[in-house]
Image (cartoon, rainbow, N blue to C red; front, side, top):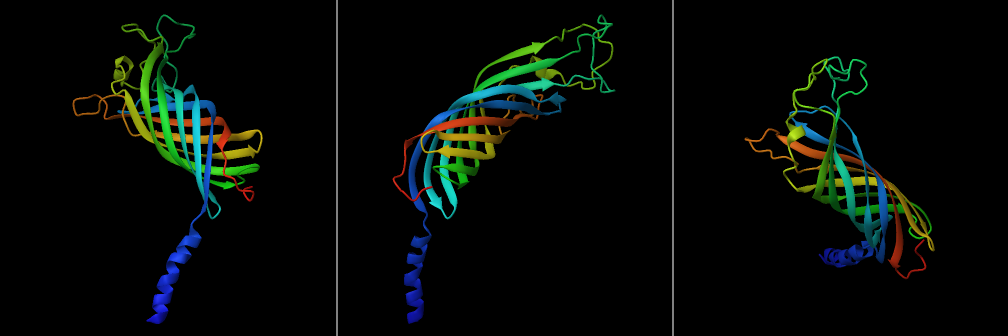
Length: 251
């Protein structure tokens, strides 16, 4: 019994020893990159990835180093060009042309650009050097998006005959404006960071965003059962320190 009591008394001390090294590092900066987006429609709409730009402000608070993992919270406020680009082909997987285009110079195309302000807030784990050298990292968390505007680029003209028929008969999306102005989902990615005590932090990251919301209505009365975003992002960021933990042992 006495041994058990001693063991129980030692548990809090052992737990305290496991607590990580606290940090109070705060860094801010900018980010920019390239996005490749598509909309997952149901019924399906054949697509190619829609390219666009993204960029904005980054905030990072590093709170702890637990064993070898550097723990931080990262938030961004970004402008993002999203949307979709349709793959208009016939049943033979060939481009579709108008009847009055015998030389086949201008195949049918349709693109919808949708611009958002996006705010991801992610938990981050890093491994490696904090102040000077390289660090690998992984981060994941929720993201929200607020619709700004949209635009369409197409050469499709109603009632104009084509040489062959489109393989997909789903065309309702081409005349429907975005209904839901608020987007939300999960963003996650991984990358590498190089830090210098005087120059700051340089980051390269690959990220994926999976939208949980739909741009169109999805009730039983609506045409589409789902219309959520899916985005691949490659971006670079630059951060500089505002607050740094005073500890000569941090490398």
